[in-house]
Image 1 (cartoon, helix red, strand yellow):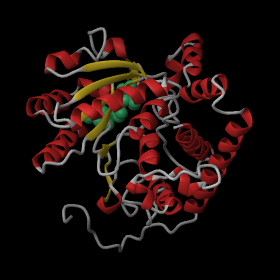
Image 2: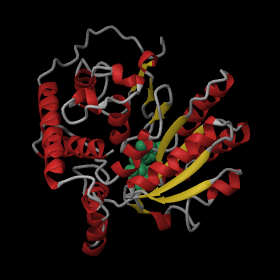
Image 3: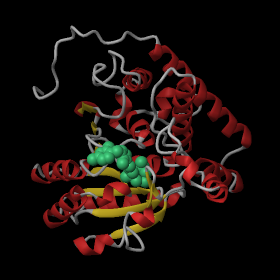
Length: 339
Ligand SMILES: Cc1ncc(C[n+]2csc(CCOP(=O)(O)OP(=O)(O)O)c2C)c(N)n1
Ligand SMILES: [Mg+2]
């Protein structure tokens, strides 16, 4: 998990820098959310469905890539995930192309962001990207879970949503249906306290969002989203329940807001200095590294080596994707409704 926390961090830092250099026009940073996304994707397996939004690069990287195949010297014990059959550098390059709107991206350059899906069922990857940033994916994810149930499969669907997305009608419709049909669905709210410029107190009147679970007749759990180990435990528990046929779980993971809504807007200015410092201190990566050092599970040199490998890999991959061919308007349409 530490490797993927660091990899996801470097991914965002590289794109944030490209925004500042004017090479990329917009970026939604997931810095601060990695503790939730990496831990959640670690709790699922090949063949499970991942349904992501705009701050879920940690889950995508964790689900697609095998650390052992990327760095065999660092991770000699290759994971048993079927997705480990996927050539990691190749798929990372495609992901970078996707973020840059290049022809080699998953959506062949039709747009440049997390609005894409990637299906490679042979490798166990069922990844549905976002329609909208809000609640629109919840009914879709619940539908995927229903398909698993109807096929008699023990696979589960995991979907993320921001706390702002919980105020949409889709949240109610999707979660209620999932609960009534007892489908294997895990909905994880990444609660960073703000939806663009709207603070959580103007978003919902209940104390927590986890308590909504009771209204749907499903477990609702609140967890510190910057505590990677706790998030992993809770998602793993929810996944086990879902695989046993016991239905959905709602997990509210509370994270800090370490960035504005998107790079390039000024929404971070809404937070006063004290609040910003509090969010900075919640950094899940720094916290996990401190705990690894404290329990003697890692040395500072090891952490530094991982950081260097991750930074080099990301810079190299993103920079080569920058040079990849742009899509051409003559490209035949396909893969829209046809597939
Ligand atoms: C229907 C609709 N309205 C508004 C937007 C613009 N928008 C995109 S993300 C967002 C806020 C999302 O906040 P939250 O769900 O808390 O997620 P966060 O960005 O904080 O992770 C808004 C208003 C949109 N994409 N779709
Ligand atoms: Mg939010």
